[in-house]
Image 1 (cartoon, rainbow, N blue to C red):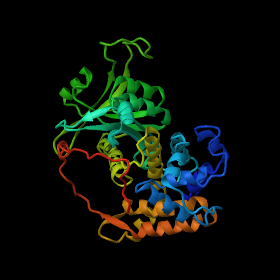
Image 2 (cartoon, rainbow, N blue to C red; image 1 turned 90 degrees about the vertical axis):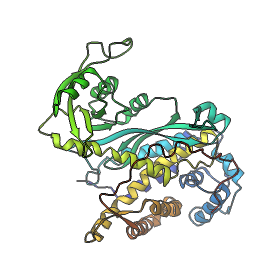
Image 3 (spheres, rainbow, N blue to C red; image 1 turned 135 degrees about the vertical axis):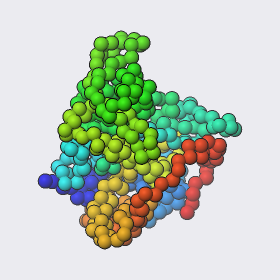
Image 4 (cartoon, one colour; image 1 turned 30 degrees about the horizontal axis):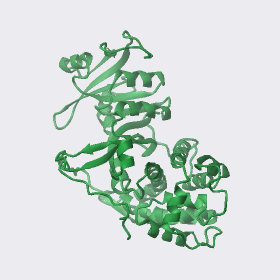
Length: 441
């Protein structure tokens, strides 16, 4: 059995950032970052990874205070304008690939930490939307969206992620125009899935195309289906059976040119009827056909694990604050979106050991306690620069972080729930985001 310490991932990230190849690969032009500047490539990347949530000048001033003594630099500050000009020279892909690097590495030689369900990675694809600054460039790229009162236009982008719900890691994330459909985006995530994965999706995603593509990749699936999804599903629903093995076929009223299957193609699936505590009937479709290994009674809880991707979006928007962009160009928007994905994964990884210790420390209390996500992100941001740049002190800093996580916990009270009000925000008008207004403190 193998295990990777937190320091492995911080070192992996640091080595990537400080690699000369990284600088060459992710600069916009060959002449960028070839002279000694007040804010070199590596320090610029570190500053951006901290997440720019306040006034840019305040963020840059704080960064230079933190970096003094960490790297060889006599520079004490730069202007926000100089910072903006420098970040224009970096491709957004840098932060995407950095996130992909640690996400892939997490599953290698790390058996003791990687959580599986009967040998399967349990993933979920889900989409959401985020609001972007209202600029002409972003309106052209992402389009506009009218609210219910049609009193104002807002720029809304679609977000789609492939998320490991057991290990709480983003394997792939995309920010794209709202006009792009959820099913095509889910297909694009499949390049990051592999044999031995189970992908759970809600009612927006079932399609013969998706099932066929996953079957070809030896990726298992579990869909929640509408009762009217197809005639075969409707027949199963009306039969009253608890479960059944059936064949599904593609819809016949479409062109099959350039498709990898024919009108006669069929996929064998297992159908399950789940009656929820509310009395609602849930219809599930899965490729897990082995009724002895994957028992009927387990599927209600197995599908419920998908809820973790919903809680990810809550953390992504409300704690990491992905919508608080510091720039208004598409390049800056993509940079910060990918930075937020990386910080989400690093937060999960750095909290992992602390949660195990917290479970031991508070095991005799009435409630189960979890690490406070809001405070933990703040602690990480405060120490990120030193952890990445002062390798001799990184172990001590990581240990300090772990202790802070363990001290700052919150109780989980079972059985608490709030009624979902789907119309709560329909009449909300998003305030305009002005280019020169950022939080200072």
